[in-house]
Image (cartoon, rainbow, N blue to C red; front, side, top):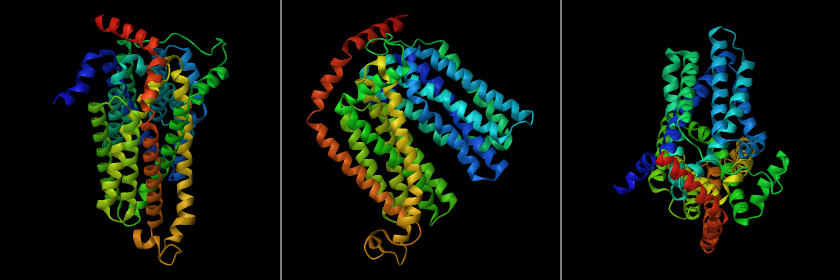
Length: 457
């Protein structure tokens, strides 16, 4: 019972974080409603998958291209006002889209422009929020705070398609856009009532006002520590495999089952993601986030192996559920490590570089999955393929078995890598933890002092 109280106590004790989390959670759900409804509108008006893909491309592009510049600006500017202004800009973009639709002037190219602009705003928001979090809650509560944020994301991913599917039939897209606009208003109102501590401004060591130098300095904060370089490399691989899995789940199930079954499996998987985020919110990741990161990523690998081993809905469902269950825990513990390790003065730059590198990993995973399966693995595991009498005896042959085999390979790679890194860091974690604490002790004391003053007020 005491453990269940932990996230509730976090929300009650830290009013700033609670209002911040609630307001931004409402705003995120509204954004997801619009994203889902907009993809439906684009397909209904073009009957072309390429047009839908272009919307996704323009949504993803800023996260890869401009995020390093965003990180440098986040470290220069006030983080609260970055979130406020980016929320406000995104709200006006959404309102403009609604007005175009209501006046029958909405064209397909408008959706590309708005997707790009909204993504730019989102890039500022995500970087500023992640950089602000260590300033809002104590070091020992960052894992739980990240767990609550992952919970909001999981609920949004699970609920948005269901809610949008119901509402779009009655309110249509313009109704969803106006709901999204109202959620931005909620998010903005909550931001006006909170204080977000701001670290002392510091760009490069010689204080030169140059964004490129700021970005280089952010990279030096990563490259100067082998621990962070290894973690960045591992998470890039993790996102690469996650990107491949995102593409593979649909054809893996539809190769022998129905779209209704696919929807049921993904709903159960979404529940797994919610369960994982709840556990992370209660548990917080413990005092040493490195061990849980690699243990749960290993469990993620086991889930992928189970999902790929046989063309059976129960095993695929359990495997995908297990994989999705570990996702918020891996992301939360990873976030806690970076937020506790990097000085808040340069956290925006460092996190933006991390997001860019891992985002590229995810994108390349998306791009490489289909040609690898269609041109190589599926033919090799056909009834008369070269692997039919070897690997085919284990995973079976026929449509979808190349996908299953690739998921097994992915899972084994994640499992072996995770266990290896867990063993590697087990011996040096105490030393690294001391380095982490010493590197930002003065800054943390200032943050705690500011936070205590705000709580008294």
